[in-house]
Length: 333
Figure 1 (cartoon, rainbow, N blue to C red):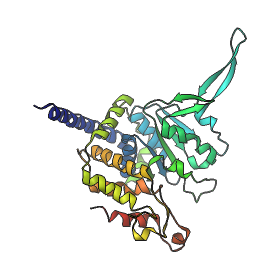
Figure 2: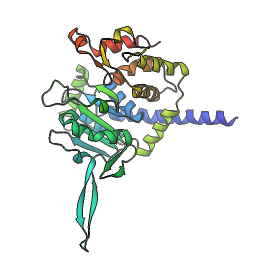
Figure 3: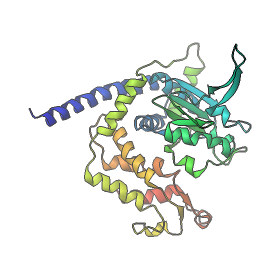
Figure 4: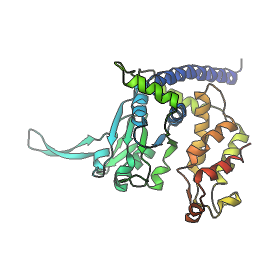
């Protein structure tokens, strides 16, 4: 058997093993999180693709519970930061303190902040000031922080699951566009269905409550993340991803006519990268060995909705960003 074919067979075998593990992961999460299947799936897609996720919804929809459950099931060292208006950047990244040894010599010692973990739960991130929100920027993109000119690497893997309250609520600040772009997906969390809420009501008010169980660990997760990047993507699907992202940018030759005048700014190159990794992760999570155009259509909104903004005149005319993305989906064949 040629070496290349043997290597491809081994990759397929490893992917099938990973799919079995991911099925166990989803089952373990389902024992704790009732309903919200799409929210759980998109959160897993973001992590499998090696990225971060922004969960948006009103309080009380189990966003925090989802993050802690993911940390347990995936076997990650998980920490939580409750974002408040008085939170400072050093409260996230850490700081240096001066100490004196037994000889009277003074020196600085770095005390790591809660960002030094594998899964960071940034709870209600938009209740802190923009300066504090930006403290996460370098960590999310570079996987290290710089304190007093010294570089401190973060553990691997490193993921941020941030929750955000709707901007209409009091005491919230909009996230900077540069930070929004660092989130692979924006996951909108809606109210649960009647059936799911009924199960939740009975399960959480009884004598016993379900608890999450560990299925993976950090090393196994990174192994699966590597497999996601090995998954083949057809040239046609790659062109489809580039086509739909470039069509959403006002002023570009590929832009749709309806984009001009309705979109203030469009998605950058990270949107195409997020789609490429996201569709691979989605295919692996669903037990397939290659992504399809349907995967692109399914992830287009969570990839684009935090990377685009509509103009004031478009808002005045009642045009919603969801309507614009729905029209962009029509380009996907």
